[in-house]
Length: 635
Image (tube, rainbow, N blue to C red; front, side, top):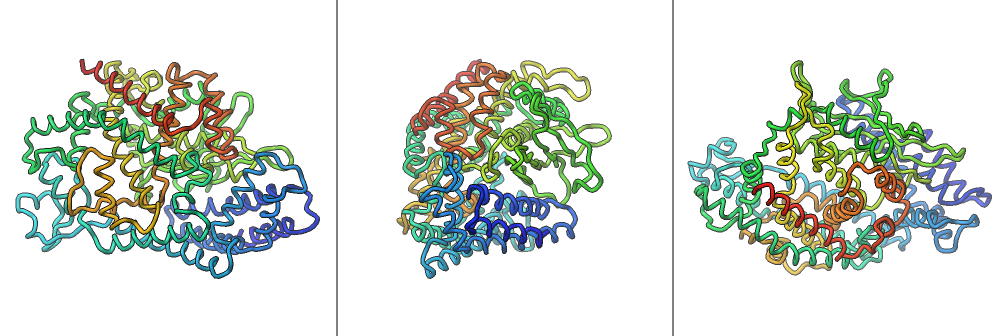
């Protein structure tokens, strides 16, 4: 496979750089990208997911080989100059706006390695990229490592709640679900205690990213990360976050006041009179359980995996005229015996692609729900279409002889979320695979999956499939209403903390050097953006592993939710199963993948400019309407 890939890439390089080119440069680059991605994406998936070590190791070897080829291409001056020439001066073949957009994306990818810079600076970019990768991996490892303290430093009445290893107590997390406030407080203060090595790694990563951005011609790393995004600039993100902060302040205070009164009433032996950061997750869960009487065990019998898949089939059929049909597997086609394959069929267009469903937990499987693109869709030279292939990986309970796999409400949400990514991959009909499906800006890639969570929280949708696995009786209406309402409880305070995290991420990736340590920056921003005070001598950011993978892009969660809420309110809130709205959403949003600039795509579909004010309005409107709904239920 490696030899064939090398041969094909060499052939395409010769075509791109030669004088007798007979097609657009962007077409050659996309074929080059497709050739590499088909091997790299499959190998990366097998490396992560295959239960047999031999297969995983072979896949890792393939990943290393492909990385070597990509690294060589990234320094191929003649190839870069050929692309640069058509971006700057136009191709000898007419280029559409799509061609120009995709060519610019390829050029930006090229320049990530500094190929456009003088040799000394280019070598520095390569060294910085390598350092950022290594430091980031070490930071992630440190972010999840347990904290050990001498056993005698913890009061005796608390030791029983933690793991004891000889003369040490191990604190492995925040113990947010503990009903004992002293346990929650102890875990918070110990687990988030400052760590000099983690602080060094974080500071090193941030300063290296800043130097990298400036070498590549950007004022800050945030400017570099937001290029070609929906937000486009850090100023837009910061305006959005500031508007959200102003409008969430009173709404979140109401949430915190409810929790504070409940804390006073329960008198759990806390050393703090005011609400503390270790209290909010506990009381959010408690109120959901007590006020709305929502417990996972009560609802799971109505959410067997079979009924949930039936619900997804009803939804996709209503919206897009597609059916999810179980397909036969060839011998050796899958990596585990309980993986199955769905063919995605459109009523008129026929087969659109395949989804492999790896849904059940098993030893050694990554404990993370995710979507993998194995093969991207694209138009082929003969006019046919290369259908996409994706894998959805979840960790659902394995069925046993007496029960099918029964899902908790949060598992149902995750299933719908990941299926949103799959639908983006299946329903995109892009000319180029480089921009197929989820291959778009981070702050738009999550929109289709977050939108699916709105369907999973709407009683009119859940009612179509929630049936008891034994009796086949529909979920009682009163249960259904309680469940869907519970998903929006304390929405303002939960959103406020996401605004705070996003603001912190932007500040860390803004101007450097920072004004003080990463911890002092956190304390300053917490006062500005969050309604719960900073706890002295803690360093929450040193456990925030998302700073590595989502550097300067953590805001994308909020912005994606804002766009999804806006789409929901405009097209689906009145009728979530409306086929006209579904078809329009497919044609004007999903079909483009990343082939249309995200900001332009959203503005065209919604008929309004993507401004910080409009984005904030969609989220605040949602919070207010859901709070009114919850208050009516409680009364």
